Length: 158
Image 1 (cartoon, rainbow, N blue to C red):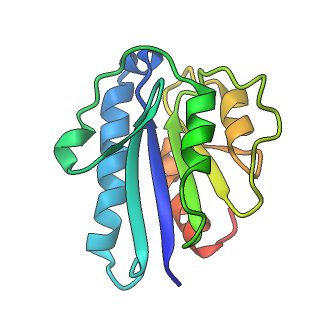
Image 2: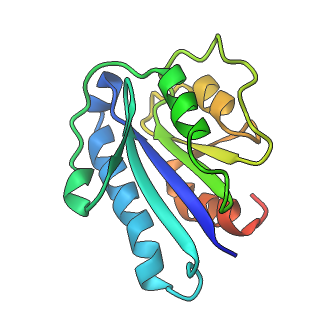
């Protein structure tokens, strides 16, 4: 089955501290290496990478992983960007963020056909924002990245 994993890296100003840019870069590189290390497992999976602050912007190539955190995040831009993506083939969304974004006005935005997960970046991560984003209501730690990706793509229990 063909699937798309949309990976979104938060690049707002709150991501500039506590080593967050380095963690984001390492997680993005880890995800890109999954299909190299185990090509048969990730055959048919398209990985799409985006940065997010006031808008979603597609990034390509590992040099694009050198992010420069500035500004603030717009939950509206996040929702609009995800909603504009084709829902087929099987869109899944992974957000790498510290959770510091205003989501109060968007209480029920999830589409049933899109599975979303939030990865908490930094020891000061706002868990409530990541709970809001995750379609299962659970945020995850960075060290769980492999299990979270596999859960999104292959339905393993996590």
